[in-house]
Length: 132
Image (cartoon, rainbow, N blue to C red):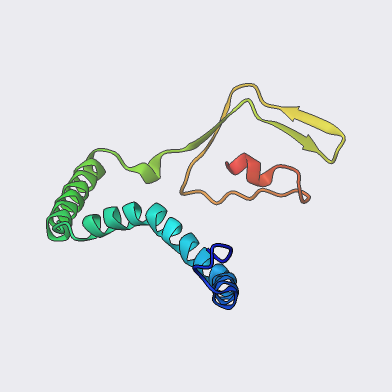
């Protein structure tokens, strides 16, 4: 256009200067639009989900019924089975006595829950593992 005489050189250079000065802003805006196109479908889905009718009251009623049923079952089964009376049974335990003798019990050792039992031994020698 400048060579054909249709546009003066000054106006042409001024147009180039304006375009180059706003190119970074245009590039940033383009990036924002591209990001928006990527994020927008997810935002629409979340908005639809959040605007669905809530059934919290219904869920609370079901939860209350489940708790009542569980409590009834617990009280009913308590009459049939006393969990506190069940012993802890260890099958064929082995113990070291003073790091000299190994004691090996053939059979089972029953620890009843109403008895006081003490486990002694150095740190890292299986007291907690025995209880697991």
